[in-house]
Length: 213
Image: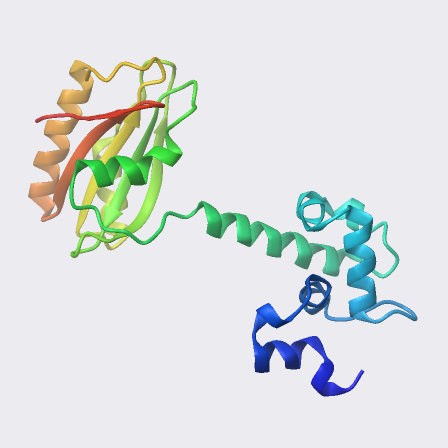
């Protein structure tokens, strides 16, 4: 096909939205197979998997049943779809200005679980979220909140402030004595190393509550 009609050149000049799905996939493939160009091979691959959703769920062995798809091409496709899922799972770049913001940022990692989980939310000096991290997993009614490890995580992430959140699978929003203790110790440890401790919240599937202290 003429150079100006090739997917790469059209993407660079017109943008990705100008390309059909098979052309975008052809760019990932890089080349076709014997007697088949990349666009034709991409069309065959999409049809084989049913649609793009099916393609995204396919494993390498299924992809390699198509003539012209070897390990390298299969790996590129799987990696591309995984990157999309990773990007969709990342929190939006937002600021934590209060307890409600902290709960909103942490909740996607805490809801609909049968065990307790502790999540740290790291922010920069303006309060913008730079990282969410699961710091521990526990049982049905307890998960450890290691103060030293949490402080180290924030410092190594380049954060200026941070908040903590954990879930109560049973639905109670009442803090336990351990919750109150770790909140006080985190606040003290943060002051010692020059960090700002934003808050500690309890999250359930339907609500949240700030732990005072």
